[in-house]
Length: 307
Length: 307
Image 1 (cartoon, helix red, strand yellow):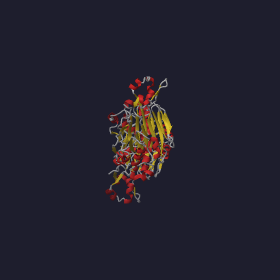
Image 2: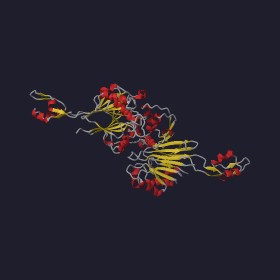
Image 3: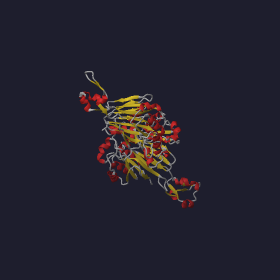
Image 4: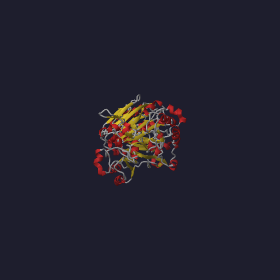
């Protein structure tokens, strides 16, 4: 069984919430790691609604400082404190967020028994902001009205499985198995070399999730999201409103499909819908014309990433 | 028919939202005036849910700067802007809120086509902060962990109705009728004086709504809320948790009943319930023991004030 890597959608609206749609937020689980990407107003209420544990979240990633992407953060953080959190929280965000959070927590006399570590995003260059044993996170500059970054969460792990029969036949020491799993060829003391493929099977490929919101259509991001398992890309408008999309630095559903196709994304999830669309089916159909494996982000839905 | 004076409850939780309860907010209509008192996270979603118009709100009153009383304000204001508001908005609040709002609006590059006028509350003295032709608002210092004020919204208008038959009999000029409605005695040019009661009937008494949250039990507020038509008073705990209430500067349901009784409040509405109570009936019963006309604040319920 592959480790869990799943996205729970908490909000899909753009700019303002609607009767049925909350502002942007996604809860991401990768094995034992829990992330929140964007945190629109009422995200903590959505977490409760979908039975997701607030305190498990260790990393909060904020794409940019339009309110529909972060107005839920002060409430999330103060609730973490009120519920007795002691574990540190990592907030990955534009630098301008910190003084606002500091002022809010100071003025409210919040009793914080945990540390907040801020990691500031760079809106101009691709950067590795976290590089852990089993995952990494990169930021990607996006083109929006204010500084904005996308995020790529990438699984790291051995992709080969031991071929026990072959390993025994070649008398490979068990101590070398871990290296084999990571794809190394065997090199014996006698100088013998045995190609990894003779000793292993293809295991699970590492998975990759890219979160791209908000941005105008921008092909320069493609090399940074190539071969993603799941691409979340904003699709604020239908393509008949291309001009409006360009004016507001947003993307159409058709264009989201194009980015997914160019990036060879396995799956595409679209979201960040304009309030003008009560029926989302036309957005889905438009993206599917370009990239068949497209899905609608819907509040409460869970997307499993499989290699 | 008396002019509408009604309170719609938008949130009743204390500190953190729960599965069923939102943080504090009340939507108040007094005739053609619309007020929002406190604005916890997701208040704008509650307004939509209950079909209340965001743009009608002219005055937002914020009691204090704990997040459960104002974290919905940035979202409310930016949505007002996104929906094209041009009418000014008046925010009555502690002075520390302004720099936070300014920073949020600047950083988010909000396109504001309306003015925000801030009126800063004084946590130390009773103050009249608005005095219009047909209503006034006073603030009352409350005793909480951080500076906090309660609010009294008071209707202003003539309370007497013309007794036509009597006025004709005494030959009162019609031009004097307006003064009679406001309770003046008639003074003729000849020096004649006729007592108002001979010329008028009792009309509708002006109504008064007091909003008292958050505070420790404090009898010093009583003179400032005497004879209110409706007293909203926080009742975070049952009285068996008096010590906890005192430590956290909150009130018990029994104490809320006592304040209502001392103030001779016509009706009491309690709210701001601790998350520990899923069943609110015990809180209601406890307050009713002291003040019979007590009601529970419940999300979506509307309370009409009648003289």
